[in-house]
Length: 382
Length: 209
Image (tube, rainbow over all chains, first blue to last red; front, side, top):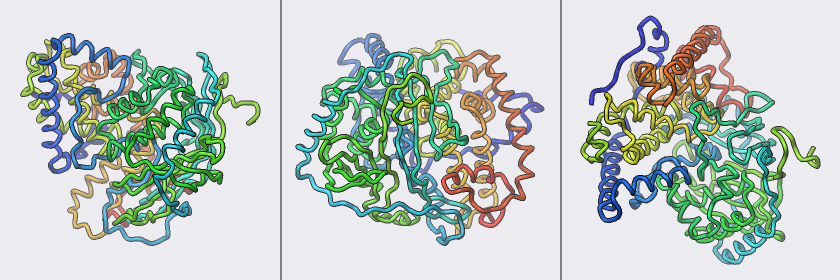
């Protein structure tokens, strides 16, 4: 098991070879052992299951088929260990690209505060009171409203177009200074083909160029890109079960190991599906029924979306980050308006800059439509 | 080893993990620009390797390219678009350069941080397929054949991607001295994360002592 360390010819790789010199790091203390033990435990468990169940060959084949249809990264769906009490990093935040807070945290404490660097104003709000009263009724109503909504069918060659307004607040580190900064409220437009292989994004907060950039998946390897819960295509969503219990079980299973806690991760996953996708009405409805079963979900009676529309929110507090994710619905029609993340708990160290009441991310969905081409918008919106 | 892996012997996976966890971790970091994501990818890679064990060719050398290939696929699922990588790389590079004042880090360590920031900045200029080849060949030192095996693409494709990437990296290196005199003010609000990373390869100054 010797490492394969063959190198390029020295002349050719001269400048690039030094690019990575001394950039490798060890895993954080204890993590090598931690992950190794976890791997061993899972293998052990899997082998025992195999012995009890079918023959290994059959089992592995089944797994592979499951992988082909479900297609989630990380695999190992049927093997679940109780989550260790160690907070694993928020993989999902990276996936969803939502809350940027904490990414630049590695500067650590001892960062001096003070002005002098470019800062946008922090977005703030009044933290609404949370209650569990009326939650089941509210989710029922939302679910019913969702089921009645007439979601059109997307034909191949068409695109799902979603236009939203978004803004966020994040910690920004320049040199030795960390301050709060924000992306001002801006329009975000996204086009996605039903199979998820073609897409386009226009979002001044993330694009280099005003034309936006492609989201199409270059498929150099001839593989069909696999959609999964964290990056679903319309086709993928259309095939998901609409049984709330099965759906929730699937969400827990496929997001195992991501996020701060399994419950929060399940909630966030559903939230991401609500915001920037256009699932069939039955699934939309099922997602709310599934959300109702996640422990810790609350009602916030007054919440405001990114464009100032007031509504009622279904929310959940992430105890680790102190952020409350709020899905905002119209009080009367129960139509989904948008979502936001509000800092509810006070943090320590550099993160204390994000004071309670800070809105780290907010969005409002303005348009969802089916259009015939990338960069086309429905006539009524221009 | 390949036989033992194919048979699903747990001791073989324990050895694989001890031998290659660090390499997979660093490779994943280069592809995700985030240490905690890299840790997740590393863990998922070995789980995936166990699940895919019967696809291992019984004949062949080190399993390192195979693992790095799985890690590449796993990391790829983290970012649907290059912009997310660039954002993460910008943030990670900035974080590397924001050394706390009180830290009594030795000069070597600070130099390493700057190297890492420069490497991320360079990687962020590449397209994803180029970055993957660069990470495998230059980061992990695989030869063309091993990288081709890891990515499941022809050797010629590896070579052409690598040469294109090298041209870009050389162009970037040539630009650097000009930027050294640039001002230290942040970019426009809302752009600063990526605005920063054009500056990170400059010589140490101010906060980087």
